[in-house]
Amino acid sequence: MELREFFSEDAVKLDLEGSTKDDILKELIALLNLGEKDEGMLFKMLKRRENLGSTGIGRGIAIPHCRSLVVSKLRVAFGRKRAGVDFKAIDDKPVQFFFLIVAPPLEVSNQYLPVLGKIAQFSKESDVPARMLELTEPAQFMRLLEEKGV
Image: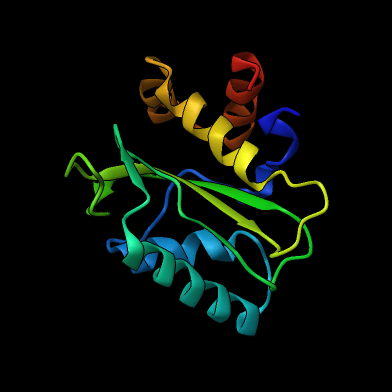
């Protein structure tokens, strides 16, 4: 299993417009093209998850994630906000890079936690945050995932 198998260029947005945590979550959800009702339900689920504790893992990275009936298979999206947003990350620094993960409650392939782990592993590589800042198009993000072999 490699991360790049789960991402697609149309679910990568390198210029997020939002300036709040809620704005960013809504923009990431929109990348999944779920429909208005499902997007609203997913937003509530992600907010509930964030209220348990921020998914901001430090180094400018957040991995909002949850299980929800609005998807029939694991879905992921990536967004970047150069200026950063206060996401209540564990290091109290603004978050610039967002990896959204949504999986159905019952998932036969059980890829939710392995994908979450691989994103965390990818994010910890020393050159990754700087390289994600330099991206100019979604295809470059896909190549970075491929190059890192995660």
